[in-house]
Amino acid sequence: MNHYCRYCSHCIAQDENEAFCEKNNDMVKKTAIRNGCKSFDFCEVDAFYFDRSDNPEDARYHPREPKKKQCDGQMSLF
Image (tube, rainbow, N blue to C red; front, side, top):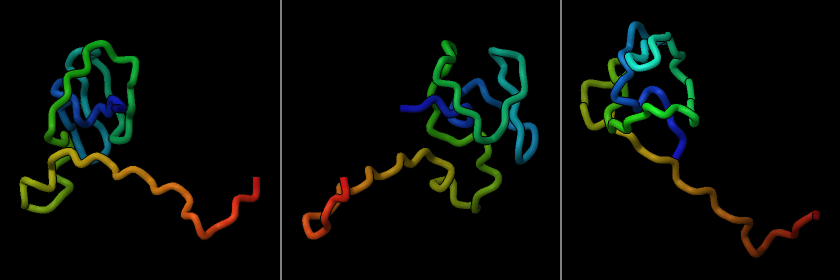
């Protein structure tokens, strides 16, 4: 799993595009991914949840669905 800063419990959203990291004491972008961060602590709730609807379930983490392999009816070019 990628370490998205927006799903870290140490992330505090400042506005709709930037957040503050309490552990590293610096600003991070909304789309920041820090896979090398040692202090990452997963939290299901998105730090930028105020961008979404009033439903609190929309603010929870939803992993991407895996992509389908090439179907049998198509021919590979390689």
